[in-house]
Image (cartoon, rainbow, N blue to C red; front, top):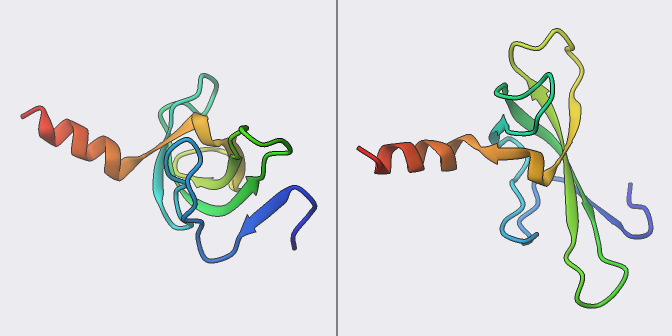
Length: 96
């Protein structure tokens, strides 16, 4: 279901949001401060909020199923609160 000003990712979003929007099914690492910091999970839903004015960048939220959390339901995170596990692995491998 789409809402005015919102675009929901169905099979995975591939649009740029200050970089790339991670697709559904991506493995991520929570980087925000808080009780879920450092946990890994899988993106289940992508909610893309389109800008209202020209020049503004879109913003997105990810609904993520976390591993090792006491909460079993997927949790919403802003795009700047998670990083791709694949991207993190590539950076770490490049250091060796």
